[in-house]
Image (cartoon, rainbow, N blue to C red; front, top):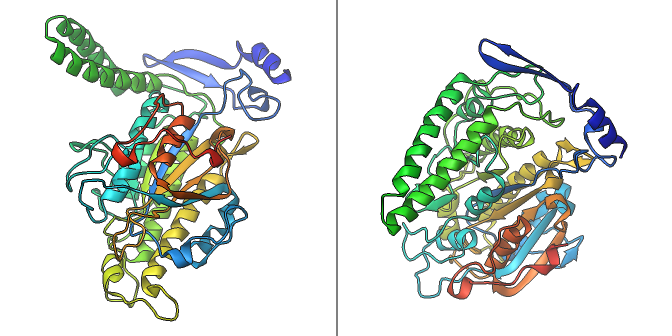
Length: 451
């Protein structure tokens, strides 16, 4: 191809290398069209655009009457609770009539549903995380070489509102402050892939040197312990290798990325509070930072929470938070649902739509960043008033680099909701023949969505 021939010709002239203050310095050319293939769908070397995965969470489910479309397949209708999806309907799949099964475990209010959909297993108590969440599994597959294996944020202002876990003792803390999140992503440790010069961070050099010594000691220790301890050390050693890969990434000049550009630092964090207007502002600030971190290839796995399971979002002029509203507000006899509870759900769907649109706005190759993503949105229940787990809704957005169809309403036929998580893992190349346990165990993909 023309681009590949030119890339070969430029390969020796693409960078100028030197030394400055003891560190390598590289002056790079910008990401020219010749560094992509003729269609703009991959790098000229043939390497595909990277795949990314994201999760999004909203609390307290939906009202079926005004949430579930009457039609399936493409061009599905948009009932009042999801009318905000109009700008992104062709990029979003809605999954309804799927179930989360508790089997012999209790129905742990606002907990069992999301744990099943993200781990495949029903928890036995409120502190039980019976397996790693799907984002952790996928991050091990696609996130080992980026600066951050994953990023987790919340719009609630509460660091505890995370839905990402390796296990019950290892939660991924959620970033809640836009100012702190900016500093983490684009502060002193950030290496701009489009910068003219590059100098490795001396502090990373020191940390990698220390890590190398630890790895050497671990190898020697493995030869002196029993089988059980070797297994524990093997997991520890695997984690250290992941850390070493991340250090290596930070010590190498990143490839230029056309879609990566500067982000303005937030001047201040929004005021604390659960008013939906404040939550929306916090959500937008965190989303913008997260999307650009993905575009700049600082991470390939992200998690965003709009609200908690016991959602405490507040409507101005209304004296009860969302969760309390779902249990105390009566069903309007004419509407057939709880109008204020539905108002809260509509605000959540506005934020889900804005999250998807943020990825869709970033141009990447001949498409958008969203085209090379698959975003997975879950909630904790179907009807919050009764804590039901039957008919629990889910979404995906994006096409995962052409591996997934988008713009569909898919009826699950009262089957296990874990089918969607299992399908997503297959899309990302996770080599599992089944996922989940007991009634949530599945070997069946959602065939309607895959190409």
